Length: 345
Image (cartoon, rainbow, N blue to C red; front, side, top):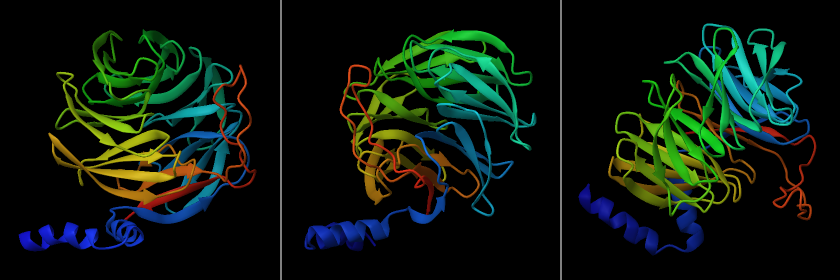
């Protein structure tokens, strides 16, 4: 076997670039299994899998669409969620929450009927939503200044504000009361206490810049931060030591880690790819594949039961000119083309 493994890179080197790309794609641990059409209009952000309910929730424009994971069909939507970004599902309460970036609030909804149960004021520009089972709290993370609203997961009532000192992006947890989040404007990943809300540690991510997607390996205390300058930074969560920096695609917004395979994946909407990185050991990481997805597919959710990945996008049109109010405009969206992609073996 050793000789065969040594011969493989040489054999690929003798092939042309197109043949090499085809061989790498064929050997990749993921491929697009199906496309689930959604339609409608507007932008999109997070997807969240509810394993118990066997549903996928997708933040899309002014509503949050719901897909049955058994039938792969759209079964309904949570309406009136303008500027939908993040989604949190609270097991055992029949409650979910969606952050509404346009209104600076979040919507509480019924998981069975999908009816709106009320709105709750949040900090400015609520983005990621997160349920922490240890503290039994829901966090509405603000992408403007870090004044993130904390809710009691049972009642939906605000119980505090987490002053995190930056523009908060995607969270992760160790399951023991410590929550990690990327600060996009500070290029840091921080750790804070889910109950006291005190910031415990701050770790610089340079040479990574503008981190968004985040995943965590709880067994080995490794944080995986996807950064806008096409780098994935691996950090030791206990010490802040930078373990590795790896190249990824353009426009990352989602990162996932599968402990059963040791794969770290980033969804790169800028070039329409999935970068697959293997954890050879907690100290060594290797880029093993670049999988085509679709331009704009930048966020990701993993089904812990099937280990399938979900991302979403739509056909993109021209990019409008930059303005003072919108210095970084995104491409226009072709109405009716929004869809979810399912990836797996």
